[in-house]
Length: 203
Image (tube, rainbow, N blue to C red; front, side):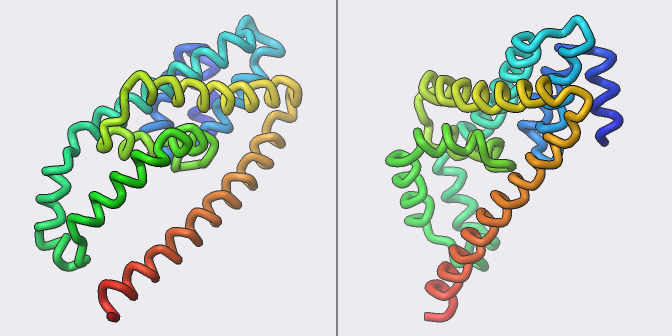
């Protein structure tokens, strides 16, 4: 996959970065750190400049986030209720108050969640869906998304630029950070799952 990503950036420059980052936001397994760090490296020997890479990457990030936000808007509370009432919902013992509680939590903490999740692998994509479901004000969602993705993109592009031909070492460090964060999120989800199962199935 890395070779394909590098070839697309080599061939299409800013447009390639925009398209790759847009896709990365919708399909998290595509590594943004490779796109951004290599884009930063390319500014050291090509006609591409740092701000052009940052802006094209940020535009791609925002485009992908908006697409997921719209998907979240389509998933209305009524549709979630129908899912909860379905056979799958009954098997999992989901309750309508679970969705209500999650919505209330997002209304209280959604702003900081949307901003901070832009720095968390996988979550930076997923967070746009609950933002849409909760009908977060689009202008606020857009502002927080632009701010968070701009900071993330700027840091990695500059690191790629500073590292030069050793940009792949930056990627390895970011990969380690990503693994640690994903592990912590996984532990949190596991704990939440155990508590949920205990309350719903063992009481």
